[in-house]
Structures are given as structure tokens and as C-alpha cells.
Image (tube, rainbow, N blue to C red; front, side):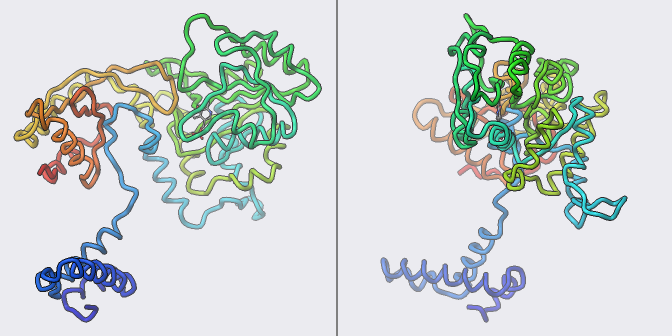
Amino acid sequence: MLRSPDLSGALEAHGRPAVTDAVRTVFSSLRRTIAADPKAASAETGDAAIAQRVIAVLEALSKPSLVPVFNLTGTVLHTNLGRAPLPAAAIEAMVQAASACNLEYDLETGKRGDRDSHLEPLLKRLTGAEAATVVNNNAAAVLLVLNTLAQGREVLVSRGELIEIGGAFRIPDIMARAGCTLREVGTTNRTHLSDFADNIGENTALIMKVHASNYAIEGFTTAPEEAELAVLAHENGVPFVNDLGSGALADLSNYGLPHEPMPAEVLADGADLVTFSGDKLLGGPQAGLIVGQADLIAKVRKNPMKRAMRLDKVTIAALEATLQLYTDPARLAERLPTIGLLSRPTADIAAVAERMCPVVATKLEAVATVEIITCRSQIGSGSLPVDRLDSAALSIRPRQQGRGEGRILTQITEAFRNLPSPVIGRVQDGALVFDLRCLADEAAFASQLNQLDLR
Ligand SMILES: *Cc1c(COP(=O)(O)O)cnc(C)c1O
């Protein structure tokens, strides 16, 4: 088969080892087919037929696994879809940094430098912190802070804040792995300052506040003011650490969004260290940011675990470029996709729906009806869990109602998912719903609809 002219193009494109492997794969599958049904032999064993299968195997293997998708789920920061779409400036910076770069090299002195130096000045400027460091994600930031400051000792946390967020990040488990003992105080709905005061002792390493990212406790609730907790911690000579989860580097109310606590605010309220994510509301790459007191940051940096969690040059480049955008808040919505999408005017989204509805309806003519509906987008990634943003969507409903309706809906959903740039929506009340808040490139969306495979 390797000498077959039918495979010369494949050899050129994929190289001999890959083609050989693919031929073997096809041969063994053929052997199984023929063993089960000897009559299949003549139809499938011609060179051309085999070559065709070999090429199909090679193409399937060389297709990238990670591909861009259209996130029309209505959840803007969708963890399964890669959270924040990066700003153009960050993408450009990633490409630049991909070559040799001054990652740990001081261009002034010609000596060894520090990779935090690319981010620390910006983070200090944006949060008012004395110092800052960065790791792979916020889960790592929390683990590292706890391990550095509280290994072998107790950490006080309110019972109302023992959160689990997606992907098995649970505060009690992280505490255990960090080597500290969780000391729960108060109750699920009400925790008072005195609950912390009564539990603080010899073995207390720190007081921790965890932002209830993905849920809200409503009704008969109380929690101590952060400023009071900070005072209590400091009176007892221990740090007060605040895991903000998402955190926002800009005041979101300036963009018509609900206010989300800012690292600068919680530092001003007395937090000694604050941890937050790079790819939630901040809108950058996956990263965990730690800002606060210089002496504590210095300890965190010295922890050998920090080395195991350090950021690579490409992520540092993306984060630096993203942070840089925050120095000009007036143009943030225009430049940072996360803020742009979250603050996108409803009328703008409705106009997208008006343009896209007939296009999609024509393609699905035979199987489904398409109508414009109003809907509400979520922010996602545990940010502002109860707030919803007015939006517009396409609702795609199988023409056939009753029997077979569900199967057709599944087929339509799969057909969109199988496009070169898969389109991901959500199924709701018997319809496939595409929330158009995050549709930016309408031409790219429309042009691939010709390839919809609706058997
Ligand atoms: C999201 C979140 C984390 C984990 O952050 P990642 O960047 O996803 O690792 C930790 N704590 C809180 C409160 C969060 O909301």
C-alpha cells in the first residue's frame, strides 16, 4: 500500500510512519470484517478503497482536538468552553512571547531576572497592593497561600463559605491538602464576629473569607463585616486572607453591570492577602493572582510549591497585555471581550437576532422553525451567580411535534456541534436555544451553515 500512487499525497502530507500506522489500522479492521463476512472481501480490498480509508484515518488523527467554538450557551464565562475569550492585545502578546523572550532576564543589568517582574508593577498599580505574585489558577493560589501561612495550624472559615466550585475544588479538601486544619465557625446562614473571636487561639494561623461565588444565601442571614474580621485577625496577630474567586479590577457598575468586589476594596478593608482568577471577570488567561502585604507575598514566593505552580511565558504575556487594558477603563468595554460581551446592549443583540434568524431559518426550513425570543444570559464561572442579563436568542423547534420530536432536536443539536467551528447552544423546553450575546463574527457563523449535516 505504501507504494500505491493513491497514497503518495498522504505520504507527502503526513510522513511515512503515520501512513504506515494508518494502513495497519485499516488492514486490521478489514481482517475483522472479512473474518465475520468473507463476502465483504472483494468490495473493500481494492487499493483505491483501502487508500480512501487510510486517508480518512489520517485526517481524523491530524485534526486538532482543541478547536474554536461559537459559545451561544448564554453563559458568557463558560468554564467548559474556555472561560474568557482573550483580547486581541493578549493574543498578539502571546505570539510575540512564543519565541525567545526576556522571561527571567533583566535587560538593564544583563543578569538573571524574575518572571513576576512583568506583572507585579501592573498588579500593584491596579489593586493598590504592596506586592503581587501569580500562579497557574486561583485554586493553586488558595492552596499555595494556605500551605505557606497555615501548614500544621488552624484556619477559621465561616460555615456559610465552605464552597465547592466546578471541577472538584472544595474548600475543606484544599485545606486538607494544604496541610492545615479547617476550623468551621458559625452556622450555614448566620455567622457572627463573636463566632470567630470565640474560636481564635494559640493554633490559629489565619482567618479566611471565601467569596460565595456560585450561590447566594438569602433570607435570615448574617456575616461579619470584612473590616471587622480584619481587625479581629490583626488584634490576634494573624493575617486575614480573602479568596475573592472572580474579583473585578474595574468597577463593573460603570459598565451597567452589578458591582463585584474588587481586590482594591477588600485590601482597603484590611485584607492582608487577596486571591482571584485571571480568566473569570478579569477576562484574561487562566491564572491565579495573589496580591497584598509584601512580607506575606515574600513568604509565598519562597514556598517550593510556588515553583511547581509558576506561569509560563505565553500566559504571562497574555496576562500582562490584559492587565494593561485596565489602565484605561474608558476603553475597556471596547477592548476587553469579557466586559464588552457582558455589557453588550440588548438592542445590539436583538439586531443580531433579526439578521441571523432568516439565515438559520432558511437552512433548517425542512426540519425546524426558528423564532426570536428574549432570554437572560448568565455571567458564569461562579461570578455574580444570581444576576442575569437581558438578551436575545434564536429558538429552534422541530416542525414535527409529538413522536420523533426529541430525536430530531438531538439531530439538529448534533449537526451544529459537528460544524468545523462547532456551535454550542442549550436545549430548553423542547427547543435548541442560541443566545446571541456572544456572537461576534456573524459572517463566520452564517457561512458554515451550508455544511450543516441534517440527515
Ligand atoms: C473560581 C474560584 C476559585 C478557583 O479559581 P480557578 O481560577 O478556577 O482555579 C477559587 N475560589 C473561589 C471563591 C472561586 O470562585
